[in-house]
Length: 222
Image 1 (cartoon, rainbow, N blue to C red):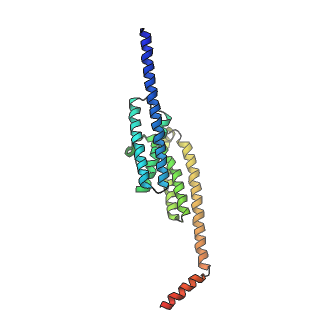
Image 2 (image 1 turned 60 degrees about the horizontal axis):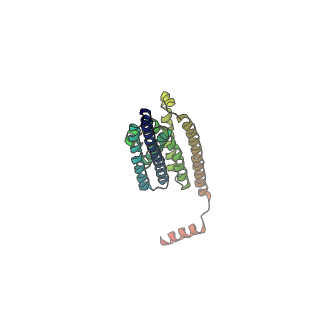
Image 3 (image 1 turned 120 degrees about the vertical axis):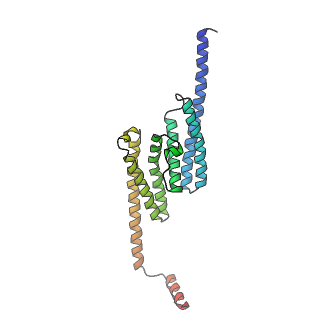
């Protein structure tokens, strides 16, 4: 074997090994993203324990991917890893808010600040869904609380000031978040007004026959 042939052979071996690592990590990124999405869905279904399990499984994959990224920075990097970490951050932020009414930190879930911030921005959309679910079940106070959390996240994202421009994609997500918040505010305002009107009308609605009968029985017992 000539010296050049040997060099090319070694390069081919290295390229094939790198490609195997790339394929494996891409598959893990897709799994981590899917697990995080499932965790979010389970939170909306109020299956918190199952959501925690999904988030824990995603954490194992994210941790492994981060180690791979340190070992092979030229192979394991880019948009897919960032997207997986954003989805993972979103799931954990939402889960901690629902369970403990507090914001988990980037250090706790071990994600880069940029991916944490982008995941946090997406939580606003999930809280709209929680707010609408609350309104559907007549739990207006819960809906109002959801809106308060949405507002808090949005305000704090804007407070990044000059660092705001250092987070790629944040402006687009913030614009979408503003529309989501205003739509939610409108939905809650309409429901509050509807409930207020309904309560006022009840004051002037004649009692039903059943209600009259109940009153008579109550008086008879006295």
